[in-house]
Length: 177
Ligand SMILES: CC(C)(COP(=O)(O)OP(=O)(O)OC[C@H]1O[C@@H](n2cnc3c(N)ncnc32)[C@H](O)[C@@H]1OP(=O)(O)O)[C@@H](O)C(=O)NCCC(=O)NCCS
Image (cartoon, rainbow, N blue to C red; front, side):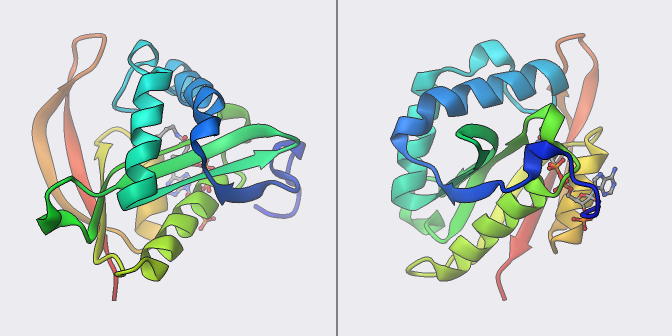
C-alpha cells in the first residue's frame, strides 16, 4: 500500500481542525456525501452551520482533525461526547471522510489513529469511542476492525436510502484499555 502512493497523499499532514476550517470542511463532506453516499447526511444536509456546531462541540468535548496537502483538505474526522455529563468520557457522533481521489492511501487510518491517540491523551482520558456505520459499508467496517473496534450490535431497518431501500445500521465501539 505504501510503495506507490499517488500524489494526493504524499506529504499529507494531520492537524487539529479549527473553526476557520468550516468552509473547506463543509465542501469536503459534501463531496464525499455526493459521490459516495456513505455518510449519514446527504450533501444538501451539510452546510457551514452544521460544521461550525460540530467543530464547536469537538473543541469543548471531543476532537476534530483534518489531513491536508498543499493547502487542500483531503480527509477529516470529528467526534464529540453527548452533552449530559454522564457521557463525557464517551466520544460519539463520529464522522470520518476522505475525498474519493485520496482514498485507499492510508489517510482514513491516520485520521482515526489520530482521534484514538487524542482520546488517550485527553484530560480526563476517554473510555470509549463509538460510531455508526451502514451495513453496506464493508470497507469502513474493515478499517474499524483493523484498528481494534468491536461491532456491538445491528440496528435493524434503521435507514431508508434516497432510493427507498431499507438498510440496517451497525454500532461499533473502541474501548480504551
Ligand atoms: C471509510 C474511509 C474514510 C476510509 O478512508 P481511506 O483513506 O480510504 O482508508 P485507508 O486507505 O486508510 O484504509 C484503511 C484500512 O482499511 C483497509 N480496507 C480498505 N478497504 C477494505 C475492505 N473492503 N475490507 C477490509 N479492509 C479494507 C485498508 O486495507 C486499510 O488497512 P491497513 O491500513 O491495515 O492496510 C473512506 O473510504 C471514506 O471516506 N468513505 C466514504 C465515507 C465513509 O464511509 N465514512 C465512514 C462512515 S462510518
